[in-house]
Image (cartoon, rainbow, N blue to C red):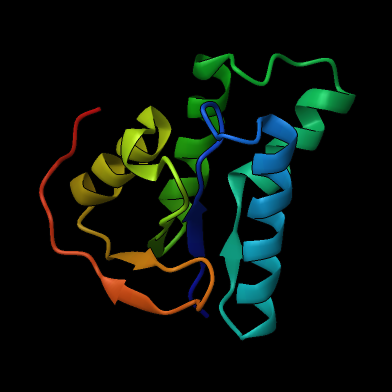
Length: 124
């Protein structure tokens, strides 16, 4: 069974970190309901940061954890939420998956339609 890594906006989300977490959870739940198995780093890590007194913006800690999870996932699913194209985290995730030659899909977070992404490394 294939596992997708769900990339969603976090740090600079217009509604703040809690809203970014809520929206990531909604998207991940919709995907799971539709039969797409996903791991969402925001759904997993935000509660750990809040309830475990970790800094949610400590990039080194989260990148280390997320890269381990990206190694284990088969595909990257980029939710095209407001601000996704300005996210340093999503740019890192896209470049990481490109480096591993794993497929990347763009996801409309409302319709859940996905389109295979053909691309080159991105910079923010």
